Image 1: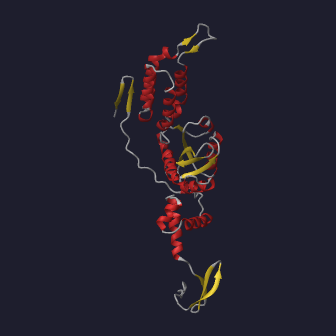
Image 2: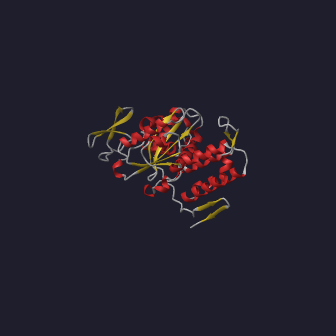
Image 3: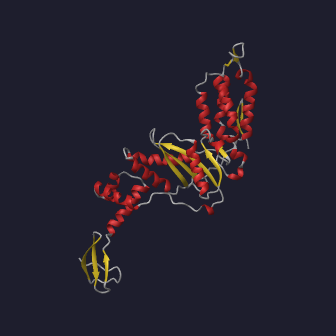
Length: 337
């Protein structure tokens, strides 16, 4: 079969051995050598790269779609792994006015996870680290220092309230209200049933959907009403005194302690900080949904697939028009304009 010269388009070509395992040809018209490129294989590589790295389909599904054997897909993927750079591309931070950093961790089992830092405004993952135990304060600080040292202008941080991080950073810090709401409601579920607990529970349920003044005002009303019940003690001597409602009282004190970082987004509206870390949860949900098709994958391959997923630009979710604020009272709730 005569091959057409890619230089001059002539058909006076002859075989001239091999070059790096590929057929080498010589054109008599322009007197140049060229290597024949298998365009069909090249298109197959492009399709496999798309289905495996972007769609994250299993090898058998890719083989069925491409009409080849599973071993052929495996061979192409093995070649692609040596050619594909799955590390995230660095974006020049000089073009950014400010970054609201969202940080959170997700896990696969008990001994492997990833800590991810993401820009809230652009939706791009800027840094991630693999962790093999539970995340620590130092892990968060490592990511913050890395981004700051590379010129990223961090103006605020949104996190799930891991102890020690708010005190260790010098940036405005927003405690994810969704995580705070879940934490406090879970703790209330272990307390004995009472009217005071039910009222406090109804107030905390509206944490993500109300304003600062309504939330703090309703808590103060609750405390005024149940002050004596909350601080009731047992025993006559001070050494033997213990609070009867110790669990609810400890929850109340912790709620007061984290109150300033629950409303950073409300006190600093110019920063554009979200009140929750739900964007990170959506990112992790999409990642784990794609990973379900690869059960039993080796850790090295899992890391490469996570790198590839996090390096892709993720479209930021459409902003939903905010609903009317909810004013909380001990008698019920009502919408306010």
